[in-house]
Image 1 (cartoon, rainbow, N blue to C red):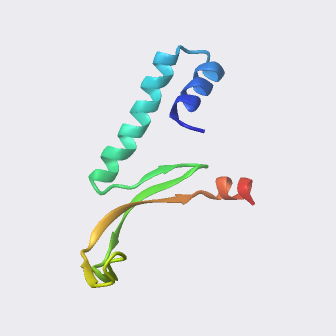
Image 2: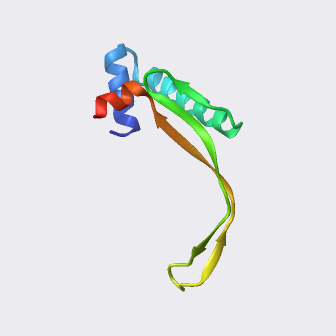
Length: 90
């Protein structure tokens, strides 16, 4: 399922226009992105938690040349599914 299909579903189920559903979807996504950029955690009860995790610097190998390289430390987004979501999948 992609973003446009989610918007179509929201529009139908909430009985709102596609424009309104698109605005709601964009607000949700932008809120999660801006909070993660600020280093904050976003928890949606019954769904899961979005957070920022730090990766330490490490050694790697260039797959084209086989030469060792140094991979710098970085911050990456993480998602941990909530208990209700996990129980639906199992």
